[in-house]
Amino acid sequence: MIWTISQFPELDHLAPDQRAALLKNLPRWTYWVIVARSLALAFLVSGISISVTLRSFPPEVLIVMHVLLVALVATAYYLSQMRDLRRLMRNEIANGFRGQRPPFCFSCGYDLRASGTPLCPECGRETKTF
Image (cartoon, rainbow, N blue to C red; front, side, top):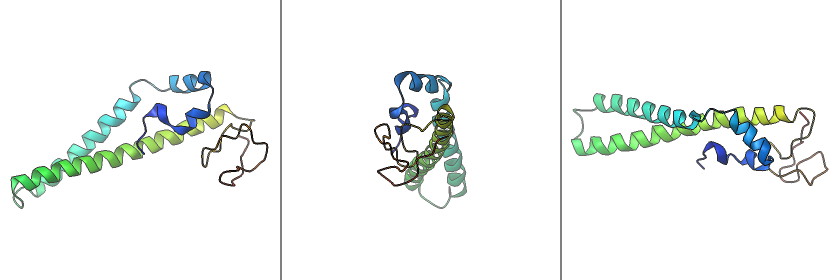
C-alpha cells in the first residue's frame, strides 16, 4: 500500500487537534522532497545502467528497460523513505502519550480505546504505557 503522509493509519486514532498538531510539525514540503528524491535516484540509476548497456540492446529495448527501472527504483526508494518517516511519526505519537496507554496498538493498529485489557485483542501483543 502506498501512503501519503496524512493517510498513515496511526493518525486515524488521534483526535483531530492531536492529528493537526502532529502534521503541523512536518514541513509542508516533506512529501514532495521524498517524491523528488525517489525520482532523482531512479533516473540516476537508470541512466547509469542504460549508459553501460547502450551498445548491447536496440533502442526500443533500452526505452522499455529505462521506464521499468525508473518505476522500480522510484517505488522502492519511495516506500523505504515513507517507512522511515512513519517510524519517526510513530515515535512522536508515542512521546505524546508518555505516561499513558496509547489509543491504538502500535503493532496492528487496533483501536484500544474501548479495551481495558493489557493485551491487544487483535494481535495479542502487550499494549505498553510509554
